[in-house]
Length: 110
Image (cartoon, rainbow, N blue to C red; front, top):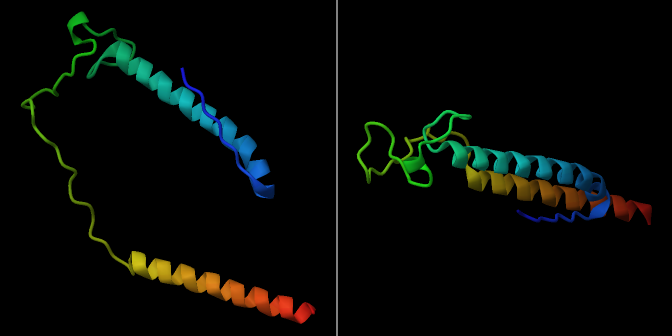
């Protein structure tokens, strides 16, 4: 069993909290259904097919793989574009621009 609570504040958060609650319950239910299915069928079995008694709870290596083999992710595609630092700089510039425009508008109202 599990218990979780999410509290979101603000005007937008009040509307989003209803959606967040429903989506999080749905995702948690799907997660636990998948865990139950894996525990009942065992690794490598097709869903709905009961696992042999010896396989329940025991880790099973994939066919043709030596025990203790370590797998690493294949290299991803080469990175292109400006990169993380440029994104941070652009975000900071946009925030500063927004602050300057907000201050200018507030000054005009006085």
